[in-house]
Image 1 (tube, rainbow, N blue to C red):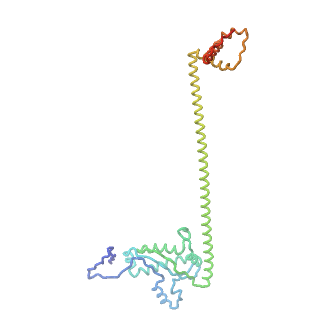
Image 2 (cartoon, rainbow, N blue to C red; image 1 turned 180 degrees about the vertical axis):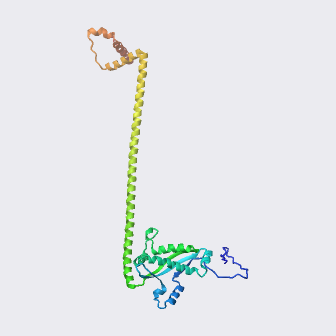
Image 3 (spheres, rainbow, N blue to C red; image 1 turned 135 degrees about the vertical axis):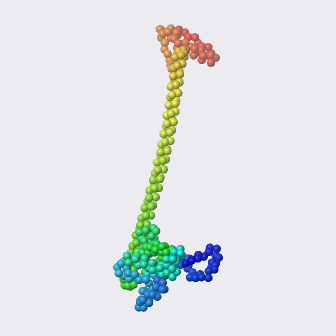
Length: 320
């Protein structure tokens, strides 16, 4: 078997062999079919001429609780690897194989569930990507069918349950009401869960915002305390430096006084004169001689002379 793929440049394929036998074309683009196919419906009528319209137009399965349900499927696919598909199935066996495998996987899924579970699963609107635990029968069948067809070079692009019907009308009405109630409950439950998640997220965001504000206030207080500490440290360092300078000055002054005692006596005389500047001294006649001979009298006389010279006057003599 020789499979020719259309050239990408659009040029025709030339066959120059006189013994070449052309079988036909097979499409590798997207194809969509409604199952049961017309061939399957015709076979049902042939096998059972008295089959009801539902039995003719739908594939019938039995649920876990022994209720009959009819199913119509929509399957979209494309042949990804023609070599594998034609080698394993042949040109005429591809579409029957897809139909048979699709209904086989659907039958397994329906037989594993009750009629109520089957109806509820077909009506569920929960997104399995957001809630993996909510995988429906349709999702389960699609997953298994895609894996089965992949072995034959066929890629499943879509599978939908077009129709799902409980054939017993009385039971169908009861189950439909229960399914609607259950679906409403599930929807409300999902809404409550989402509202809870939203409120939890908002509360977490508020807490994080408050924590950020508290942290910023703490950092500001810490920065202010650090600034005050640095200022106090600089002031203390300045006092230490001033005290150290004063101590060194005092040490140098002491060294000068030790080296030149007369400067020390002069400094002491200045201190005494400063202390006696505004002081009245009373001298008795007995101490008159001692006073005029003391360094204080001499210093006072020198001070008076200097003051008189500055004023342009003459110092008055000191009398005993």
